[in-house]
Amino acid sequence: MKIVESYLEKGWGDSVDNPKLEDIKTAITETQKMDDEHGAFWVGVFDENDKEVVLEVSKNLDLKLILDPENLDPDTFNENKSKAANWESVLGKYELLLNGKVDELKELMNK
Figure 1 (cartoon, rainbow, N blue to C red):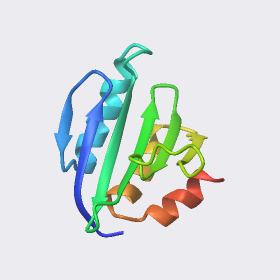
Figure 2: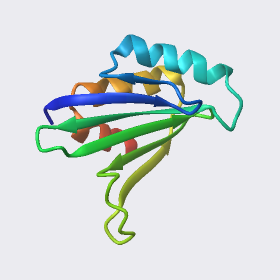
Figure 3: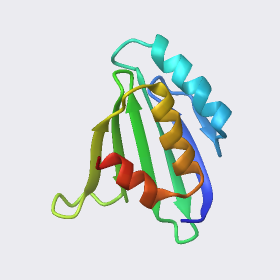
Figure 4: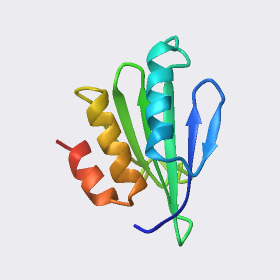
């Protein structure tokens, strides 16, 4: 997937356009300090056809990979859930996402 645009959105309302890995490291640190209600963030990426993929992580290391989040049809909505072993593995998954390696990310999420 060729990434043409991305964003980072934090559960407490802050956002970053076209985030880098350093922005994600900052979001991880901030999320660890947040309360459970606001302790989450997500990154969305868009390809050249405006297809969106979103990866969300919560403070308790729950991950959600949402393919085409605009599709709300329950029969075709595509969401993969998993639990990360640690924050380092979360960072690795975001690195894959930012590099457009969505197929590799899906494989990791399904393990």
